[in-house]
Image (cartoon, rainbow, N blue to C red):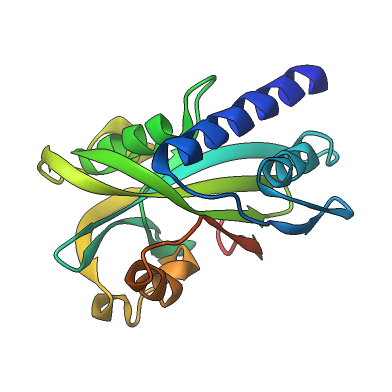
Length: 207
């Protein structure tokens, strides 16, 4: 089973490498992972190998889409009364051999009913809870068409009750994910997203 997972990690890593190559992004440094420093390709492999051989936790690879229109970000609200209530950019786990950009595109359609084009990878984040360790790849993209509709079965199963375009000011008083949307995203956008950035590991607030 772990051998199969290792091959899956390699496939995803090659997929990310291809996406970056197509977008014209330059290599970047992920820092210290698995006990030694890595560059662009080895850095991603290092993160993914930690998921494959990291122990008894469930490991998951996911993709998300940050879609901006007229200064507002497409967000979905997950609400389970008494347990959680938060807003997050659409995204979810990749299925089988699905390329990450395709996974992000599919998740937007399932959760929001909108068709989007995925442009480039901008953030890589890790998060965990006692049962799961996840690596999520965030892409920016643009709206192609459709009307907001979060009534699909996939959205209902995820307790998505609302989808909306939110401005930076609208985030006030709300629990918002990924955290980069509060500040970093707006600064990075002004700088043209020079290169994809690893944003570190955070503990999942809700699971």
